[in-house]
Image (cartoon, rainbow, N blue to C red; front, side):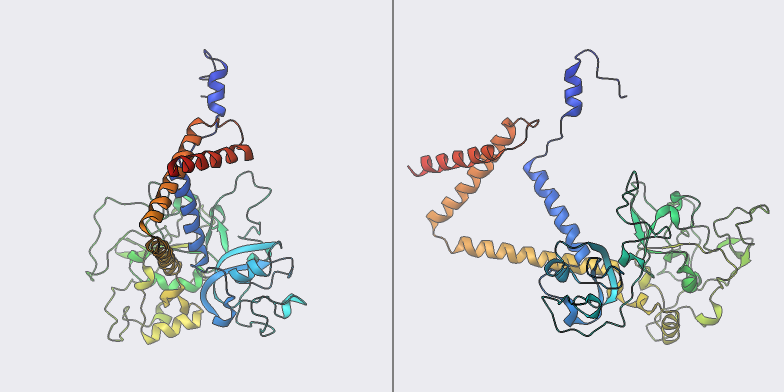
Length: 420
């Protein structure tokens, strides 16, 4: 309660409420490392030193839009160019985009020349641009962060169009329908927005295991004909469920005649039991183009896909050709997924940290015994001095240059005493 604790001791309780939280050196370092990891995951481990243009249309990379140079928002630049060529400009961070080539310095930038890679084609015709490049997101077209919003809310990215959406703008009755665990963490790997879901209706031919489950059900699960595929719950009501022996599409609607927004229940094709397609045969055992449910008469709903769902979908020649016709062939490319992108980023980060540790170890090995003792003693003195400073420092006051100078003066005195 707001009023409790303000009586009795009077100002003491109020002072405690206003006191800023303190952190230990260990917690501070952990926070810095967490921020570095998050940045590495977004940037894919890119150190931002070289323009990625020479690599062509990369399967996935971090992309930025400079509205200072291209106000129309029809160009994107790589991490290195955002730092070297557009420092101080109005730059929009777009997270990652697929099949993109750096535009920095091409014809869209007028007289601006790329400092890192000046020789570029006038345009990159295979690049794709949406309203994100103008700093607008979702069906509402709002910026992020939104200066008019009282509270900034997280957005989720469609794995097809790669636009970002507010969770309450994706056609659900409630955001509680989004598959999450008890701690609020997402149970889905990929999200497909309502606009893009029609071109992915072929996914409804697959067992429920590819759909992220909204809740952990304790009810017994029906057996599947394939022992390698687990039968899970569907993510939302838009996935077919068994009713009286027929597969019905509820589309997350109540079965009431007065619900005008809910289309009539429609019988959907029976889902396939997956076979092994290692011999080139179709996993579904059917012609995917002629059996895919029609989206024309159904309410467009978002899809939430389970972990590793891409590994399940068929890769036979017929299905692969169908994906290409639908413009979603990248779904069977492992390197396209965010999960793989972040996995590679973590590997690059681990390698970089190992190299840093190797440099430090080599440096220490190059020192003689006395020099090593001096280095280690200095580190220990610094640790103790900082700890002593934090324990005695009044957290209600700002840290001044005099405070910092005093810390280093004490360190110098300790070193003098140690050497004398």
